[in-house]
Length: 208
Image 1 (cartoon, helix red, strand yellow):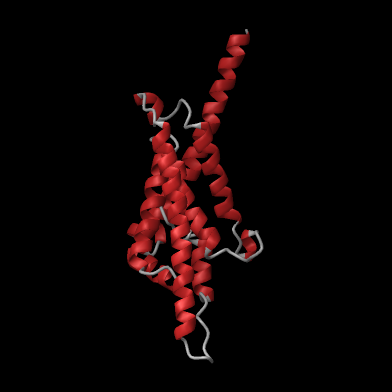
Image 2 (tube, rainbow, N blue to C red):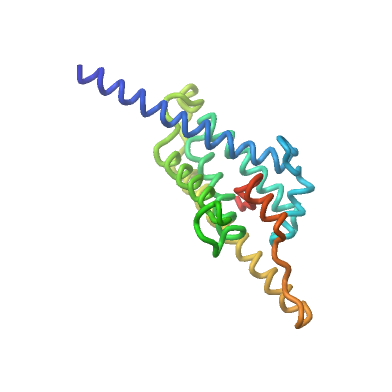
């Protein structure tokens, strides 16, 4: 009886992991497809590049491509349970960049333009990276095991990418301030850009 109870609990845990993976990974992959391909009303790579430029991520086409690729690829890997923690770790890139750029300095709640959504997605990513994809995954089906050294390297690379992206943005903004006439101020993202980034693209830019 105890064995049956343990098996039932494992089954529920695996279903819970599958639910988190499909929901969070699928939605992030959708955001990436919006950036790259204009999927579901997205702006495509050209529009994404323009938004990146407006929030200080230059060159916009490079950061836009990185954002879309990491959200799309990381989201699909997470949803399918492929590559162990690599998919969830990849999704931490856009979440970290979103928190450090568009949402920084605002109240936490999404209704105030804050980081509520990317922070929640990041928490799910960390949880999935730690817990693993579970039984209902491609990793389990094909017996894939990601070595610890690769996981550590992937995590360090993602963290370094976030740090580099934020540092480059700060340098770019400081340069624009120095070059601007005294009476002018660096342009802040317009209300329209804020709306797009909040409603259609909560995850905003990424470094991965």
